[in-house]
Length: 120
Length: 110
Image (cartoon, rainbow over all chains, first blue to last red; front, side, top):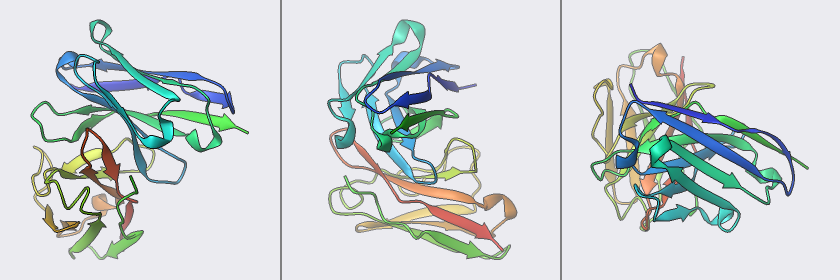
């Protein structure tokens, strides 16, 4: 069974930093692109970043470029999101999502999310 | 990278059919077949329901169907059931390994 378990969320002051983790199990982690998707309270989903199988390609939504860094450790089956210079508008539930491995550009499985609250 | 446009809410009685639209641009929905739909119940992570515009993953009810024409994709739920009450989001590949989601639609079963 595919499982994605996010952790690391919490309350942080504006301008601060936080590192999110996503522990993956039930599949071969190194065979899948992975993404972070966030959802502000009462709002819709927003794709944040994704990372290639080997970690050599990374892509970001414009609003987080230069502040967030996505990374992965295939030996530990883990995905990370380092968030710096946090703003109030970064307050959201952050989901870890697995892409499929057949080129259909979908978010095939999702975790339950971890809440990040940036206080102003 | 503007969000795709969806109606805020759609409602229907049990057994009826409803359709949710998802309007993008020629840079996303209009350029790629990679439109997917996700269902989200309160407090839960999203679940993939439709991909490549009209394909259903294993285990997803055949009461759900998807289509696309030009810059607009659509999700139809036929034979509406109480369990279909949830939020629904479309998503399109937008090139260069980036994605854009829709604004979301709350489906209410009357």
